[in-house]
Length: 384
Image 1: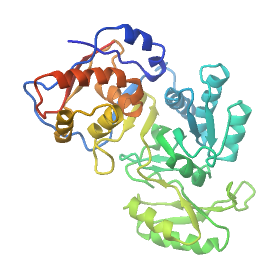
Image 2: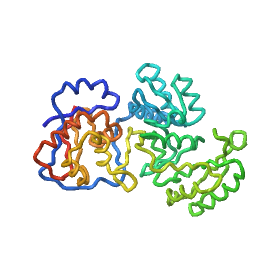
Image 3: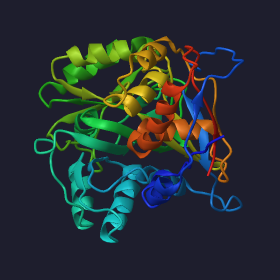
Image 4: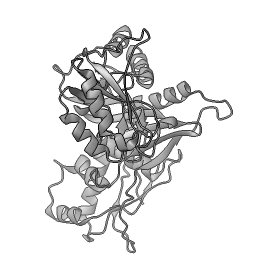
């Protein structure tokens, strides 16, 4: 069986010439015997790597830094980057600055989500700009205050929720970094603040409406104040009303819609259906979570084929086969590094350009084969 080298994003570029010189390639085929299965409805996760020193206790900052370093592996030269705000995003910006100043990253532009992130990026020499000048962002990386099983988020406890949402909504990919204390079964479930940015004018009016909206969740609404006891003022000269829940929000999507209709509410901290992937650091290692074919995100196969093959494949026979496919049975790997099938699929889905040449060869071979059945494709014997 032919083979394909799977590399981590940081090493794909350096090994591209070796791949071009390798005559072997990836073969796609439909197995003779196959049990059709749909993809899991819940997000999948894979362990990316273990703690560098399992015997040493890791602080929360250590975990944040590990997750941030993993996320920065996906940054490439030439990108326009959304730079998040908060304690985790701080480590992301610091790592990007380190790589930029060492020459490992070039021709990048950062679009900060707050004044303090802009100051940090500028102090590191990272070129910065604004959304007006760079309305299309390649990749945004930011932290989160809560992450639910559907990769929906609560963000904004750092006070930058409006600019964060604007920048991250304009990004092709939004990668979230967090430690495992941020995982919740339902948004609001941590019992900590879910922020809502409101205009200063008649802020009590909206505080009362917000508290009434979440009456069934046992919500208590409080105006955020600074260290001096004065109202906290955002970069946009607004106030923040923090919502504290005794019970998780029952219907986050409906709540988000209602809050957005309140006059005087500028933005809320529910970031729904925005994250492409979430990198979670825990004491046992780092996991990458991505959405699968739940009702709230496109099926993996659709994303996979659209990322890889749109604009290249025109063959109608393959198109008919593709439309009938309902899932991928297995995506196997026997590489020396122990990269499993979900890690491969996550890398392909997020960064398809690194794999397109090899996949095009595989599709070409598939089209030339006699077997044109509509069974899901099986990728086997993928190794370093």
